[in-house]
Amino acid sequence: MNESVESLRQTDAIAVERVLAGDRDAYRALVERHSRNVHRLAYRLTGNAHDAEDVVQEAFLRAYQKLQQFEARANFGTWVYRIAANYAIDRLRQRQKEEARRNQPEERNPDGLEQDPLLQVRDEKPTPERLMQSTQLRREMQRALSKLSDAERTAFVMRHWEGRGIEEIAGALQSNSSAAKNTVFRAVQKLRHALEPFLESRPQARVMGTEG
Amino acid sequence: MNHPSEEQLIAYHDGDAANRSEIAAHLKDCGNCRTELERIEALLHALSDFPVPDPGEDYERQVWQKLAPKLPEKRAPWWQMWLAPRHLIAAGALAAMVLGAFFLGRMTKGPSPATPMASVEQVRERILVVAVGDHLGKSEMMLVELANAEPRDAKNKLVDISAEQRRAGDLLEENRLYRQTAMQQGDAGLASVLDELERVLVDVAHSPGEITNAQLESIQKRIEARGLLFKVRVVGRELKQRQEKSQPAPQKKSVAGERNKA
Image 1: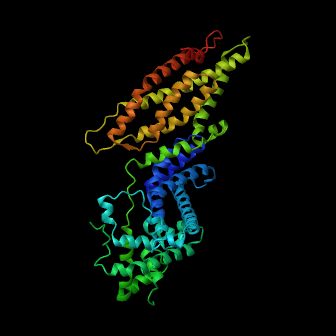
Image 2: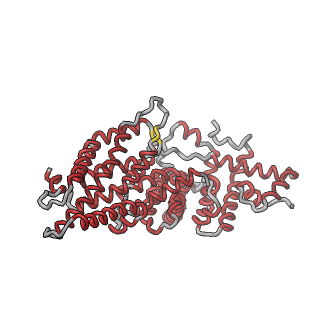
Image 3: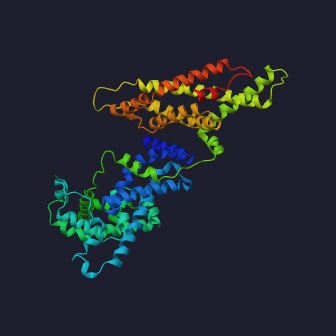
């Protein structure tokens, strides 16, 4: 562990101690230090800014409410990250259940995409940059990601987009490391089956409209 | 070894493979497996470009502003406040002063008909005066340094206030205790100044160690707008004067009473 990470953890530990001693404002330092990371995870798990924002707020609120139970005070960042992941997974599951109950077959799009939170980017404005990114490959990626189970999507996002370790993923999924590793594998395998035919028709992998 | 499985190659790519050296050796000799690994890399590379919109420069502050009203106060019991590790220094200083005042009183005062309750009140007040006077002196020095810190000319240069930030963090702990003690003793004037000081200390203590010129100016303006430095200086000096003049004189008016009246 490098010095700056250790220093950050010590600063976190002091802030946690102050909050527990009654200094609510000390929580601001923790929120400001970790909210961007939590937002990135939340967006990747939920697929849209509106839900991501709810996850960020709820994660920091729950962390504050449970701060007394927080033992490893030097790892606040990891802790709130896990709370966010768990809440996002619960939220995805709940939404899928609700929509499965509510939706009739005739209401579905032919490809069923309206159920996928990753495609519900209702708050995104069609800027030229976003329009450029809205290529067919991106759509295929969204479709493939939406077909992963909650655990697979979480495992994939945490391992490949967030660079988190297997142990941490296992913690978020409430499973063991062997099962978490297998979940990551299943996710990548499914994505390969869904996307490789498309990738192979392109000269390079970086053809999704973001290569500039 | 045999050809590694797809799962082993993905784990190898991720750095999670148990038999990493064996797979690496196999990959040197096996073109098919290298091609397979390249396909996995290509897929994951393409997926890594999946964009996350930037929530904006001010995002952290926005999260806090939305969250803060939802957070209930966490009120720790007073004894827990004093026993928290970072508070022990201030608690120890106060305890030493109590003992010092007690023994000094025993050594210097002969038998006196003065009422015991009045003496206890005066001792308490003197302790507060000494401790808070010292605290305000240190706070004043920190505020002066911060108020006079020179913003750098170059636009992108950051100003290092990490030393002030650390001192503000330490002062914040003491400040909270003295403010609570002042409130308990009914010294509303002192509690008010300490409350104002605390807000600035919170801002400074929670600032980054290096801040932009604009952020430095913002902090300086806050100090200036509240006239905080002036108030701290006046109250600090007043307390020091009281401390110097402090003699066991029963007829003397209470410092707290005078300041509240003012």
